[in-house]
Image 1 (cartoon, helix red, strand yellow):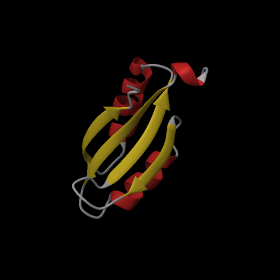
Image 2: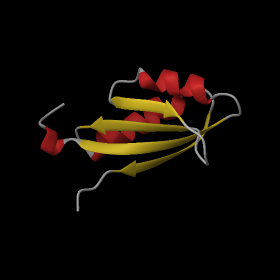
Image 3: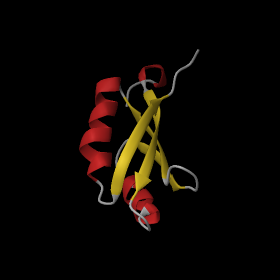
Length: 83
């Protein structure tokens, strides 16, 4: 990663198949660019914090790596903004 000022951070909210949250969170935790991955209760089953050098790389991380994890049914990516 380049200097922190250029890094893009995002939360990825994930819905999984029933009973798959813990396994999905554990697998995603090993993906480069993922800083935290936790299974939670509520409308989403896993919440991930990820970082990338730019928005394009963040999109590639989500589409090519995270969404390919078995057991995921839906993701919602929320980029962090500093207002």
